[in-house]
Amino acid sequence: MENMPAQAAAPPPTSPAPSPFPGLITREQEPLNLELPFPTLTEPVVPTNRFFVRSHFPIPALAADTWQLHIEGAVHEALTLSYDELRQLPATTLQATLECAGNGRARLTPKSKGLLWEQGAVGNAEWTGVPLASLLARAGVAPDALEVICEGADQGSVNDEPRAPGVISFARSLPLAKANQPEVLVAYLMNGQPLPPEHGFPARLVVPGWYGMASVKWLTKLTVSTAPYAGYWQTLEYAYWQRSHGQPTLVPVAEMQVKAEIARPALHEAVPAGQPYRVFGAAWAGESDVASVEISTDYGQTWQPAHLLGEAVPFAWRLWEYSWTPPAAPGRHTIQARATDRAGRCQPTTHDPDRRNYMITKIASVEVFVS
Image 1 (cartoon, rainbow, N blue to C red):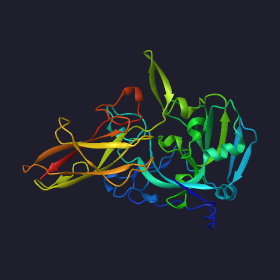
Image 2 (tube, rainbow, N blue to C red; image 1 turned 30 degrees about the horizontal axis):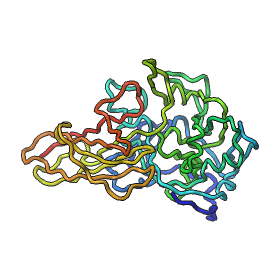
Image 3 (cartoon, rainbow, N blue to C red; image 1 turned 90 degrees about the vertical axis):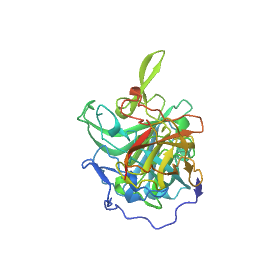
Image 4 (cartoon, helix red, strand yellow; image 1 turned 135 degrees about the vertical axis):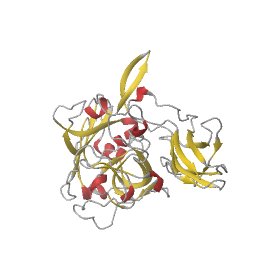
């Protein structure tokens, strides 16, 4: 994490044009939802035009010169910031991996509702913005405050079940304990450039360590609340069952779970027999760190350690590799990968139905053809 002085660069275009996203997989055209073809992953930081796009409603047309961020609710002094005022505040730059809470949903059986992401609704980027904690400090949070409700400018109707009561905005809340962590940013740069419209221009929340739904795009309002938020995207969607004394209760999806994904070989790739092959991928662990990645080529009977690449960066994924020599005889083979974090949590072999269609972390498997 790097602290930066106030931005002195020339302002970006008032309203950037939509960005091209060559080669991304279209999961939905309207609203726009695009997936990174995970086998194309090569570097720790995903270029902006390769980063997955998640939208719940049409992308709002916002302009830098009219955009405002309102901070209100249980505060000593309500604040309104313009885009220029936000960019003049002391800023922080950091890397953070964002993953859609439904990433991997295409692997669930029976078929699940929602966007059928495969592997690539995840990416790691460099973000620059103002720590949310500093904005809350300027407003002065009331002593009995519990949460910060973060609302975007995107809005619309939800016609699938569970239906929403008319037109709603996308909004999620953060407990104050998380909102005040120094890594949580109101970001305006992605990989050193102004956010594209698809990624939240003029400003968005970036909540490292938590699933992507917490990183509200097109941010326009922060409301400090003295009661738990129970909005649509907090209780009906992006929520899972948690059991207490045997009784299930819906709770909001929050921290990302430990997970490894295989980028290469790709599904059904032809691999030369008897020749070393570089198995390659990425692993992440939410607010923890990746401690290890292991590979199995015998359906989980034995596991071998993969090599973690580079240095660990808080809240960013870790690339890894493993040298595998396929058998000399041709045939089908399955490669599996699993990650363990610093707390000793390891990926499960099956998906927990209490997680509904979220937090899909069962061990990744890729079938290849040895030829």
